Length: 499
Image (cartoon, rainbow, N blue to C red; front, side, top):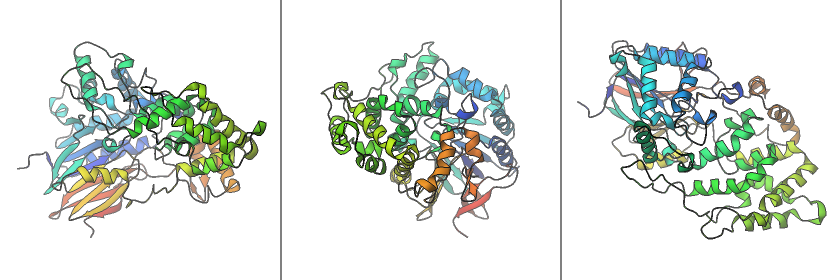
């Protein structure tokens, strides 16, 4: 008998991102497909033990209108709204039907966009909404919200599922702080917004990207999250330059993101960041080499040289008063960068500026290489012990299927949100980029959905899942694409062990 839950097969999906009370803030598109896929999983191996694992970012509270960076008093109301939203309600009904079936288990692992699912009051609402008073159905819902991931046994193989943000310095969760919020709520207390300091990724979304997203809905669909994204944000909305001081501290918080959090058995003492910005933050990191090269080629009004201005800006970015995270506003760094950027854009046009910024953001892009050993793969596999046969992550939105050797395998279950696919041809020069620019600058999600480039849709028809099954005396892991309306068996992309 195993020390862990045992199943005949498990099915893993992640990064669903149900959230957003307006259509252009909803990045999940294939909602009917997802509901039908859940029903398909429920029908597998009727006499066996089957688990559906939602491996993080099930909901997306960062797409909701909340006060501050974490929903505390609002958490229950927000989950109720998401569950009743017509865009998502069929998914929740499919999950409710799933847990009513004998031999089915639903496991929910938190990511970095749904941290409120760690609160006991939110878990109670979710269990009650899905299972009502049916005690057997309620017992079929499990949560993994402490950062431990979820471990189970499939046949003779041990499987470990974790969202993956645990190794991401932009988006790591401080689980002890989340536990403190839960203690507060259980004790009838609340949380002052000033007590909660978010991770760098949350700050980027709430302080910068959501403002841009109101005009350019597609900005949330680009991966990966890097500091070069700042250039794209500034080109799209130069008014964001006023937030350059915040952006610096966001990048600084990212660099320091792997530091340990104070562990105390209390509901007090929330983590606060170190009051220091690392000196490695440079204009290159904020704007990217392609965008910076364009700016350096310009001559600005008043005889000022862009190279000199950016050099001065970079010196200012690296200068921090002792004990302060704020950039000295008297140095005028935001205005220097704004003058350089807008002066250059007047000469070349916003389309060329956006093309260069996107080239920086997507440089060395291996988004669709399922064998690429990205940072999440390297860091997760480095800390998972040899007893684990299958590792499954999510978070990056980039599906992966990698043979680790020695009969051990790694999967990333990708995402269910829209994925934009840029090609080298689309970004080659201003002329080839112009049709893409027209779609992007329109900004609306419906325009993105209709767009076709190089004889294929701009938004990929790709929704991913991972299955691990005991079959014919061995355990087989598969990366899958769920297609059509989700009622048919998914399409196999890669399997381990190979036939």
